[in-house]
Amino acid sequence: MSALQATYQDKWDELADIKDELAARDWFPGTSGNLSIKVSENPLRFLVTASGKDKRKRTAEDFLLVNEHSQSIESTSLKPSAETVLHQRIYENTNAGCSLHVHTLSNNVISELYGDQGEITFQDQELIKAFNIWEENGSITVPIVRNYAELPRLAEAVAEQIRPGIYGVLIRNHGITAWGRNGFEAKKHLEAFEFLFAYHLKLKQFTV
Ligand SMILES: CSC[C@@H](O)[C@@H](O)C(=O)COP(=O)(O)O
Ligand SMILES: [Zn+2]
Image 1 (cartoon, rainbow, N blue to C red):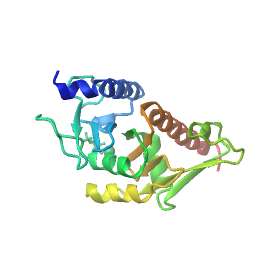
Image 2 (spheres, rainbow, N blue to C red; image 1 turned 30 degrees about the vertical axis):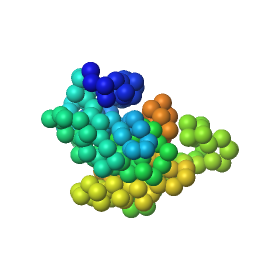
Image 3 (cartoon, helix red, strand yellow; image 1 turned 90 degrees about the vertical axis):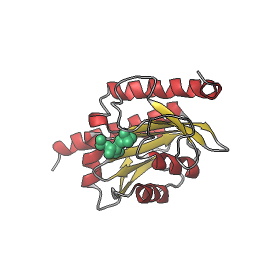
Image 4 (cartoon, protein in one colour; image 1 turned 120 degrees about the horizontal axis):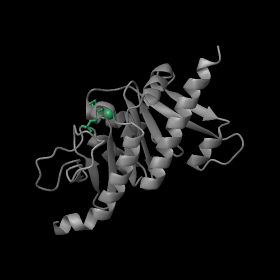
């Protein structure tokens, strides 16, 4: 292990554990999804998943360290996730310490059903307390952006939606990127969003 690697081993292990838990939920179909965790703030350094891997597998080549331009800063043949720039923009625009991107059936269907509206809001749901919302009439909104093929443009579209009270952005027919101050909170937010999406779709089956 290099001296540099020793400085981020704890973060590596934390992200690897989160990856295993999301994999157990089957949230990485077809090698989709990417995860990152912040290692330092100034200058920005974060670990991000290597591109194109089967994220269900736990290996020594799962993550690499990138800089504030989403470029690898270690000598490696691994490529950072194609969507690293989205993680970069989230770290630039929020107090996030961890950012998680997954493609699920529920988040894709919700993004298509409400894509023209540009957002979906949930209210009267106990689980919005996962976002630290405790008022009786509190609500949580998830913006929905177009799935721009050009990744810097997509990252810009996501960044444009970031404001206080936003903890995740849906990309239409693609997936969700959710974040939190640390790995625990990012996973809590992602799980809560996915529960709300699945609940909404289930309820729709029983109502006209
Ligand atoms: C294999 S489809 C998914 C990709 O196009 C992409 O959206 C994705 O989430 C994973 O890309 P990756 O480069 O492995 O991080
Ligand atoms: Zn994706």
